[in-house]
Image (cartoon, rainbow, N blue to C red; front, side, top):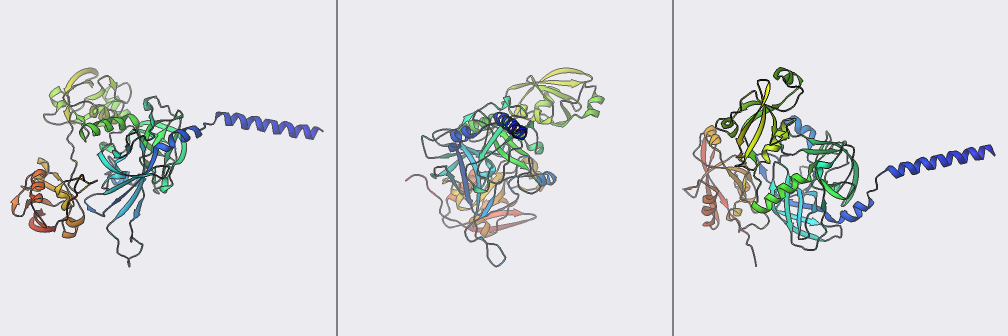
Length: 476
């Protein structure tokens, strides 16, 4: 009898413990049911291109960093791309990613690297519907892209406030890891405002331990209220797969980029023209700071807003427009979000005391390539060539000692077959000089079947004949 009572008591205790534990565990079923149908699978196809560089995560040029941070988007071989040397690869590759619908009329947010270079984008919903998408715009520095499908009445996500996130809070990711649509994984927020990726990074990442893998890239990160508070973007990995560290772009950053892409097609950022570094304990002591914080100015660009405001090397910037600067990433984000032409108030530590200076913010110049290859049915005549070019900066022209103005960034199709290479400098078309992208387009437009590009390569100049292909047309 005693044994029976003891067993019953133990069973009851175990039941109570299990019930209590279950009560404290989060339940994501309603979030998945309510929001899962707004999460989409994104697949892309593109012609294999020879490029001067692989697609870059913002700030990932450093080889040591590249070893740790890898984009989690799987590349799949196109038809006929088998393994082994006996089979020649077809000039096509495929990739998979995720995204989420943000409006009922078909706008979808995803990562820029998911759709980068894509010739065709397909968006698939959980109900098996598929739509072709076009790129409205993409921003390399934040790795955010906005795409559009021709549909209405779509399920759309709700946005939350990532500034209210707390470390330890439960979060949920939905995406297509390895092409497995609408997969849900959960974890907690490990850190906020995490700066990763070096000087090119303009994102205060949300760090989590949510399991994300190849194919999750561009998918949403939800809180327990079913609100999107981030976009899954990168992982920390030595293997290419999940290792417990994932990073998401705060949704307020994504929304700011989205609004600019819709209005202008590109993102405008501010700059003040300083080189800065983090303040460690030793530097804080040497400059008389009470603790390590702020951004130490190591150099000031000549004639920059900072120079005109009187900022000097050795100053420590403690705040911008009332926002405290704890590390370099904080300064970069605050200045970049300041509208060019407006005045930024900088609180600066100099000679053992704080002072305030005002700087009129300039626009940060981007060196984005001008995509002349056809993308999503563009009517650009230079789609006949299959190239991406950008203007050379004055410093670049001086460095390579050239009179040319356009450098080739990517080649594909006819241009690749003809032997054009990334890094070639275009001087002219069919014997006539070209000095801008517009002039290049105009020169190509007048040609019917073959274009002879005069390019500068190293110390030599050479004509490269390119057989053009018919350009695509818009409308009926």
